[in-house]
Length: 259
Ligand code: COA
Picture 1 (cartoon, rainbow, N blue to C red):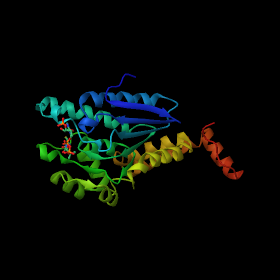
Picture 2: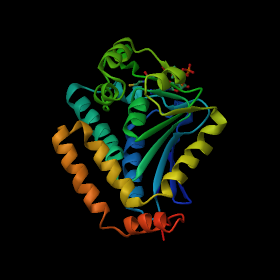
Picture 3: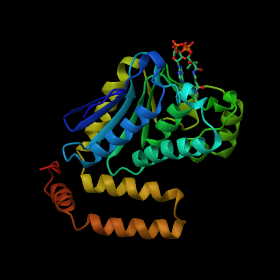
Picture 4: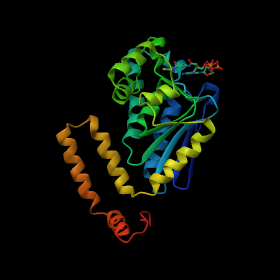
């Protein structure tokens, strides 16, 4: 793949996508977003990839937002396309049938916070700062922030952070449930890899079924969600993984799901 603004590596079944525009604090211009969409599609279709980690290049930023230079040139019609395009890339991440972990190594502002929110699990460096500062530019979040932040940390807090544009330090991000865990910066990637490896050791069908069922929580009524859960539970029971998992337990040995 010919990538200008991302670094993409695959090692031990873990794909790492590094947003790589450190001189612009990894701001997402159109080209970077398009590359991100292609790389996600690629990782989704690569049988060797079981988990994806997204992080930012350099010490300072995960992603400091959409590229404000590009943003400043938008008129209303193009702004809607701009928003829908970013949303479509982030939807691809959220709806991926493989786990996507955000390893947030620094500023995660605007589109950076929205990118992290689209990932299934957010791990944060103690130096990271989150926020939706779009109001300072006279706009609102356009890559899913109004929806995903409100769903992730509750509506009242989303009003506060989106209306003030205040930054959220990592310890507060943890306290309000925006991130799963906070680590010292030099521990962030090793811990992300450790979590990826742990999840890789489980059955891949059960992982993708879990992602699908949990993702449905904001799309379905409780009744419909429970029906989906029962269907996926049933599908799991038809797999070799289920046979292996239950046999291993009964034989008092560790299961080997990825034979
Ligand atoms: N879009 C485009 N360029 C950006 C950017 C963005 N979202 N965020 C940072 N940059 C660029 C700066 O313009 C600067 O470029 P330059 O060296 O060519 O002038 C470079 O990245 C470094 O940023 P700088 O502002 O000098 O770093 P800082 O440490 O003083 O401040 C931030 C860091 C994150 C507080 C500040 O860059 C910022 O507020 N960025 C915008 C955040 C934002 O509003 N995001 C939402 C966008 S919708």
